[in-house]
Image (cartoon, rainbow, N blue to C red; front, side):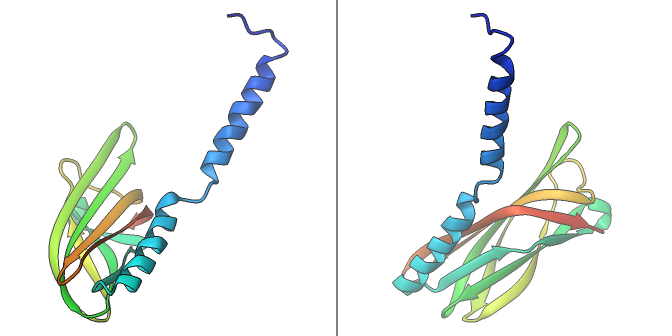
Length: 153
């Protein structure tokens, strides 16, 4: 199929507009987190919120990062937290995952979870993270928050 020269700019403009629409659309994960919190509160589940902080601290020359997590429970419970981090630098992606069992005391707690990279060290810049909290007492629930955040020394 041959594209006529005057149609090519129209196609390019259409593709750019579609890309811009997707780039500025609200994140589905933000809506999902809010909906998950509302369902957890309504169901009486002990874990009511989990969120990933906006900046993590690089530790030990990139051998680990300290990721801030905010955890809220309506009653004392054990929470299994899984934190995943990915950072693209050039053509490489540095990743790390940590799972910890945390005692939630029935209030809002701010904690830091150390995540170690699987191969190459983390570096200052931007990363993408996901935190998932799972709690299973009388009721089981799972909450997730995911977004980009900064890594700094």
